[in-house]
Length: 404
Image (cartoon, rainbow, N blue to C red; front, side, top):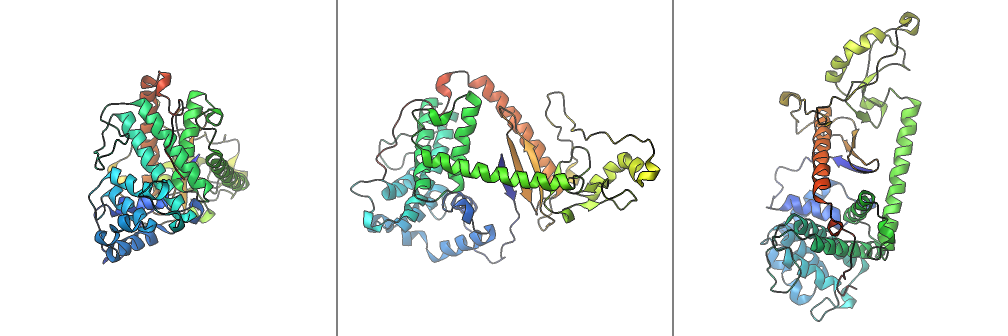
């Protein structure tokens, strides 16, 4: 199970904005913070803008000669996303590897801290996940460093993709060992876990990945946390099953608190009273609920309402049966904390849950249907393309270089 929080950020109108800043903020969010200590997203945008203004590119390029780890980390982030710098993945890797590798031009050990090392390894893990996808999809990377570094060349190369996956796991494990479990560390762990489930392989027992206990432990902790969150949510739903779930057929929106949904104002008793995420859902459900919107003594022998049904098309994928005028998202919208759980195709019972105060119920349902349809398409494509064992990330041998 994965969890995503969707937000709309209200930023100051006079906040300086730089090309590539949004990607930089997202990447920094995923790689330079422990997932337990993520600052508010609005704060991250404001701090990033101020940092870029106060520390222009020319003021940090000196980090290469000075071997300043914080400047090198910042330099890599800007190169990676082309924010105040010419975009260059290889130059970003060079900057981060000056922090993590033992070489003549590397940062002296007495300048390093566990924090800067963990952040650099986390950035490298994310970059190598990108390289893995590029190699597998047959894309190329421009070489700026003049080295013989392994890079995607434009031809689909599953073996190279395997090697990048392995390197990403090694960097993630080191980051976790240094005390920082960033969102990207969990992403790498989840990716490996899902690939293993897909292929019937226990990744932790393979020669290539069993040497990364910190990565496995980080994922075990997060899974336990998500299971506990789910247990508490289900216990709350069990105590008042109609109060936290929108009653409209096919909706799927749930609320964190009772006040997150509107309740029927009719005469039906509280234990049967349906709740709705929006007036649209209440209107759609009225034909069904009308017969039951009365006290128990007046209900008589009317059978219980049928369970909600999700409309599906001929391929078994939920229809995107929404009128665009129904899903226009107001940028200033803020409502109660709601969520929607999205089932994913493939082995196991994979789900992703989207939480948001800023997405309307209509937008959240559309996101669910788009994700389900896209995931089903990807699973079908994968089944057709991944019949050869050599195309399975997580198998084979390889090394990660000379990391600290």
